[in-house]
Image 1: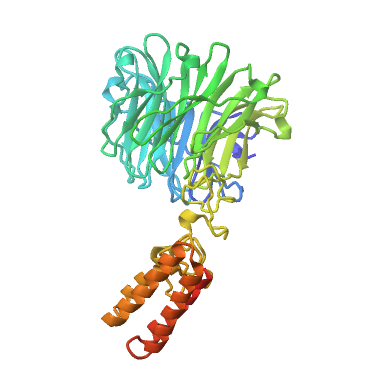
Image 2: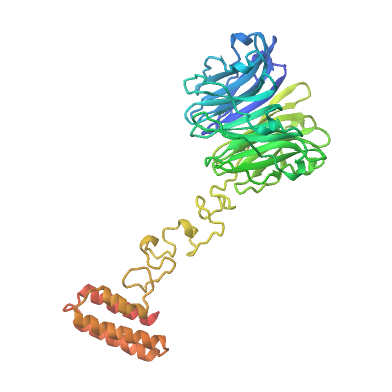
Length: 524
């Protein structure tokens, strides 16, 4: 249990959110009543799973005695964390932001919901992402003159907010509400947003990219599964891999109950096929809700969601591999405190190597507490369907696992495929081990019909070369015709002539090599 701040001992802790850095440290935020109102709390859990000191971070003067809700967190590679939440300000609900540096020192809290359309209207449900340069990106939904829209703003590495802009521009929902946005960002500063929006018939899921200059592209519909083409799709979540592919999960009604759906949108912004991934037998005919997603460096995605098992709500986990293959859902809310009590609102983060850190709120019999678990990843870095621990070439795609020389290193990454000591890049026969029958060290077995070409390559005295080439060619002709005895006689004549010229018109080194090659050819 990590919700240990003295302000809220014995009081309700709600809505945890989690992020993880490159070293495996995780950072959790949640809200809790402190005796006066709801505040936002932050704690770091190190890579060994040891929690640090819990801090209250919602200290803006607007909300000193007003309710703070819906915290969200992102973290950069250096361990700086960025938190956003909403609070009832002086007139309406506003969005706030703060940075907590890698040493756990909180910066200045700022109000960032400053778009003129809704300066005096409510802003709701902020979400946050961070890039590799310390910039953070926040989205939320807020009412303009007619309906709810999605707002976006960048806060640079110095903590200076840019201009707030509307990014929900799909023509389907120009007159309908857009709500519940989610955001992720890549290392180049491009951000990717998903949200639910009405199209006049039902709610759909929309996706839009905002480039590093802050220019939004065109929004597209990604909720295209036939189960729920005419049913509501809601509560999307998004994650991105190192190649710029984004992965979206959402909750959708299939006509019977709520299910969890998954879709990949590639780096060019083209969505793939949508899959239903909530397949645990506990809740096959019961509702599944509020999915969350994380992705590793290899493009494997990890999804958690809340599902009814018949007695209470539990937390489920499923992996979708880089090729889009969904694994088996498993129940993970197994703490003895609440084995028969509700578990809600899971959150997940993943390391580049695929280790997942998961947190959720659960009822322990007296109040809500925050729970945490981790799942060790099984990585397939090249996406070939073979786990790295079993892959003979884990970083290069080779689903067939071809290994010509059976040395445990796959052919696509083996520098010497035939294990003859000659690197493939200079080996004339990279998939042939001559096993000692290689007088000229070209990596190929010495063959009789290659003898004439070898003689020509040495640039010998013209008369000697012609005589040796004639003998070698004649021997090859006889060998090819099946006259092995006559071919052998010609080879022996070839060897005698070379021996006679050794150290004279043929250098000793070349003569020894030709004699060895011809002798090997007789054996091969």
